[in-house]
Length: 373
Image 1 (cartoon, rainbow, N blue to C red):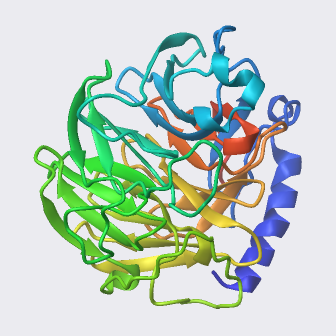
Image 2 (cartoon, rainbow, N blue to C red; image 1 turned 180 degrees about the vertical axis):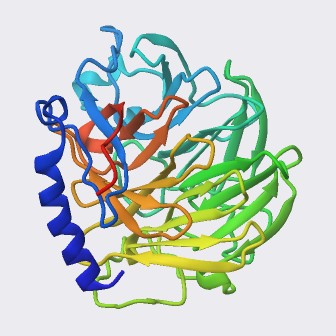
């Protein structure tokens, strides 16, 4: 993105704000219009969502997923609760409806599988199965965690019945390993090919693809479609001193989404870029934004063409044209808790944020802003 384009976008954003109807200004819920006067989605914080049962406390919410009924599945970290709250810890998977009412909860250690030490990503696939993983590192020294790496993904029914495990705890042999993951951050199943795409992740630096029924490994790739290279660190290496196109390997592969047309979007968090691929791993293009945290998380708009890709960055969520990867605007309604650690959209266009230390939040879709000139 050229610097002069961004300057014009900022200017037009400020001018466009004055023209937005008063009903949007009253809640500061509008999203800025972009250079061509494009109509963009508008959101407002739902301050009543969710309603956590009083008997429970939630640790850091790490991820959010949506099922076919628009129920909201939250994966949180019970081990992050303060000692005096641990007795009230809710199960790590807790479900709410779109109004914020409690539906059910389950999860944790059990027979036949290895529950992750540090919960990270959750996804509900098109068949209704629940996928989840973790990003614990053996030497992170966090309280209450065993000194092992989360090198596995788990598959459950929506009632918490164990179905399958891909990989095993503390068994990764690096980026070339086709049997194990290494601290995977996120996952997404593409219905057309029944393939599981994994943002793998914190220890590995690759996209890994598996058969969603059998767990059989199919293919992998790194930044720009390159062969992934090992660079395993428990300590997060934060880098800002680079320019487009940036390093030839991925940093933390933090989020992944696959559009209906098979285009794959990867959030390369520490290199502050979104990379776009074909489903076979061919690099297509990227969006880079240095100077602020960017590409923490991703979500697709639910319209028929999925015209927008939502990208967490700065203090809010950027609205990006999914096909061109051009920034169209930014979502920063009053009261937003931040760009999210992971985000998700439901069928009605609402956005849900899991913001680890800051909690979780619903941004209600209010329609589209006035477009045109």
